[in-house]
Image 1 (tube, rainbow, N blue to C red):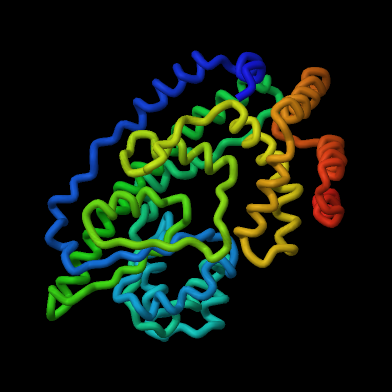
Image 2 (cartoon, helix red, strand yellow):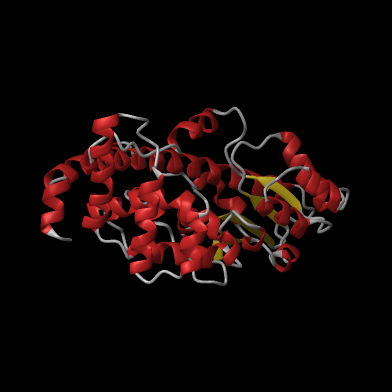
Length: 355
């Protein structure tokens, strides 16, 4: 990392101090698996890690559905009515038209089509509706930019918000694992032969590899990612460094976010609505879109990002409008910089046309 960058934005000592206080919130008690160990015998778990935004992210999972006995699905804020609907779809009691009419996004609509008529038991191992964790979710997931704040302060606040987000995810995942074990036990108890091999398919977002690492210690588990190379956004890369901070489950034992990474998170958030979403139409799947977008953000260096921020910050000190507003002039300047960096014109124009 550039020493000048570190000194100008936030000192190494300050970041280490933040890291130390941040980890206090992440020191969760270890998940006790002994109570479930007997129920995990003759059980294999296959994690299907996916992007869960578009229909193409889950299309083709039917083969794994057919090979499974129990399917566990990610769904924050689920209720009994939603669970009943998924199982009716699995039993073939719901038409494709009724699935579409349900109003789910394209990912969940496609997932329902993939399980339709399979006659597999579906369960949600996730935070249920109206639970404390579900209510808290609406707070921890928010981390807006505020251009009325100095760049240093904004990086600090994002850093701390990611710590809180990771703490919530770890608590959530501990509950997910407990629910997973309980559902497996319940499923096995319903079988005439409890020693019969049970294949469990877990369909979860690709950020949740911690679940697989923990389970891998105690049972037969495998996993797969999308066929296309998966690449996390800068924001998720930063969050996952907190997420895994206290677990001895990640062989790389990643370090905490540095200021260069956090600066790229800021630019990524600025560009997201203007150059990510408008360009979805050019990419067949989310993984390809993510790789393209990360490459664009990566082409900007720290000083360029800081300068963009400071120009907007200086304007706000004069006029003092809403701090979250990204002006047209800023987007046009970024578009010109993208051209200079060799970004294809159709992608640049797509963002400009979204103004």
